[in-house]
Image (tube, rainbow, N blue to C red):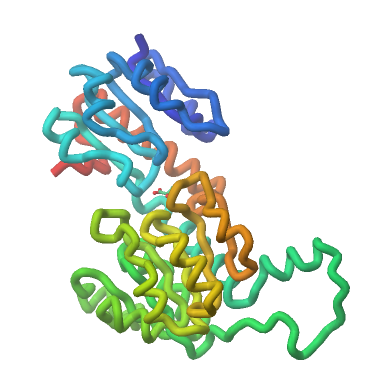
Length: 321
Ligand code: DGY
């Protein structure tokens, strides 16, 4: 029986850092996630579990693991895959990997913003399809960013880093959080709090950075799209279920919004078929934190948290209250 189960192979430096943590078993079956039945079997008796976002850590899993499980170290900042109250009730520590992926994820949000407003992926597909063309003053027109408004929904670490980049593009920032940011955080960003509805009506680009919770599931549905400008762009690099994909496809088809950029999906890794047919959508396979440096930092931090939990000390990124 292993001491530690790792549900997805990490980058080499992070795998090497597992040395010394006892017997470590690693699931080696990508491109699929570890099948649930296999996870329930292989987790039995482990003391540490290093997970990624596809593994649901709930009462059933904790039952299967048994009383020796001390820590679940998630290799992600998002922890919507983990039932933290249930872990806490059983004395199981939960950690995540915040901060180290903030800048990379904000960069990717901007990659999608630019791709959407200037039709970058559409232009690439157009040429690859060998479509005949000639320079034309009316061809593939997008929208300007300078002088426009960026709306950040969920202005935490990644939302703030995304907002900071807007200053370089000459954009004004509005944001929606349940509570306004302290002035010393909001003022350098030139960011002003708005109600969710006002943000939708005012923004030329809406970038989603809120966590997935019961309150944010399908936050972007038909009603939200109806409030947005017809020239607006929606970008989601948080969690897929925050956006109702069918409603999004309908809004794009009806011209209620101009374009959307999605890095995350409602039924990941599945992509809603209706979106695949639309040229106004740019799709990426959950690449927010996918840089060499960031994935190394995430992996090392996850292992550091795991090691601390196994050693009985307080992990740096402990989430239990
Ligand atoms: C996270 O960390 O939550 C991302 O979605 C994966 O990098």
